[in-house]
Structure formats: C-alpha cells, structure tokens
Length: 267
Image 1: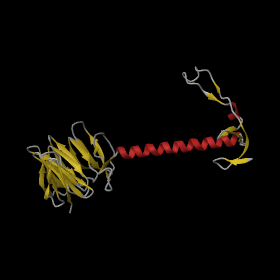
Image 2: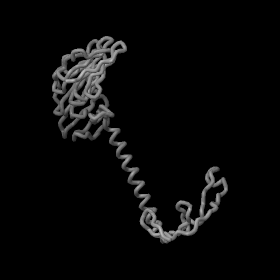
Image 3: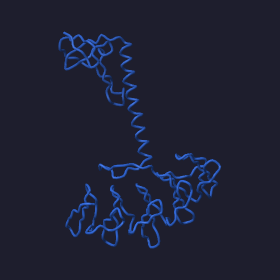
Image 4: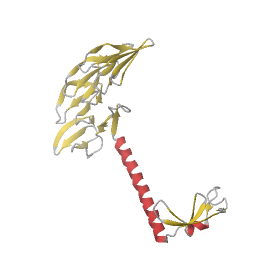
C-alpha cells in the first residue's frame, strides 16, 4: 500500500508497530533527555502510528533541510524589517479604520548625520547646523526634523518652527512644540496654556490647559478647567459637546458628564 507525504513523495506503508525510542543519559542536554530514534537516520518515519519507509536519498533530505532553513531565515528577516519600520514611525488612531503613520521626529545630533530629506548635520559642540550642500538651512541649540519636512528649533529656552526652506514660521513658538498629523503643531506658551497652529502659521481659536488631543477627522478635544470640550474642524467649540470625559467614537462625540453618557453626531 502506498501513500504520499506533504511533498507528494510516495511512501511504502508497513504494518502498525510499537517503537521503543531510546533515551540518552540525562547528562546530555542539561538534564533533559535527548530523544533518538535510529530508524530516522535510515529513512523510517511514523505517520498516525504507521511505520513508513521514505525512499529519499541523503541528498534529497539535505535539500529539503536547506529549503526549510532558508524559509525560516526569510521569515526572520521580514519580522526584523517590520520592527525597524515601526521603530521609525508613529502610529496615530491605532485600532481604528482611520489608522495612519507619520515619521517620528529625527533629532539632529551627530556630526555629518545624513537626514532623509537630503540634508546633513554639522555639530560644533554648542550649535547644531542643518546644511544643504554648503548652505545652512537652520541652526540652533537643538533641532528636530518633522515628518513633513519642517523643523523645530530651540534657541535658548524657546522653540520655533521653520519650514523646509529654513524660513521661520511667524507666531509659532513656545516653551514646547508638539507635532500632530495633518500639518498641525501645538505650542505651550505663557501661563502653561497650549495653542494649536497649522504649519503655515494659521492659529486656531481655542486653547487647552494640557496638550490637546486630535481626532482622525481633524476635530480636537481640549481641557479647560475641570471639563473637556469638543472642537470642530473650524477651530470652534461644538455646541453641547463637553463633559468630564469627551472622546470620538466611530464618528460620534461621546460625552460623559456626572455619570451620564451622551452621543452627538460629528459634522
């Protein structure tokens, strides 16, 4: 009687047998016995309790082993590549249909560090320079390259925003600058208040006591006092959207206030 294995090779099926597998002494393998079956070396295998003879040459067996090893190495390299990708990108709105990624900020620190936008870094110890050929694009005490090609630059205790050509964006500065998707940044200014700007310098009309949250539809959630508020894409508060906790759930505002939950459709 014949059967075929996973690779389509023909096997001769012998009678059902019980096989004694010899265990080597425990000292081989740090106390874990090595399992050894002498029949494996001569091509005998067991499938569903039947002893089968595998008429493969030693060369064929080695070829299969080589292919299996190469597949394992390929899978390992793929997993490593995915890890590198994730380590350089930030995931926004994770777990939703609107999930997206942006490059993480690249901090310009090392002398002759190459940047993804084609520029490079010079560091003289006290000042960082970003160069394009022989021309200086920006310089400062600290410099970060954002996902959209803009730069955040610290001079002294203040951070500023510069565009990809090295021009300072008017009005966008503060003690801290955070970046968001869709070309937004938030600046911490004055009395520890946060203000949101588009990267072209346009200021939105709201503020927040803490760094604000952005939604996938470009709406915002801010903290003012002990309440949170929903902000529409136009930069103004959405009527009725407030509470102890506000979030965006599947295109609707979820407002929790004094234990009561309300849902309001987002425009």
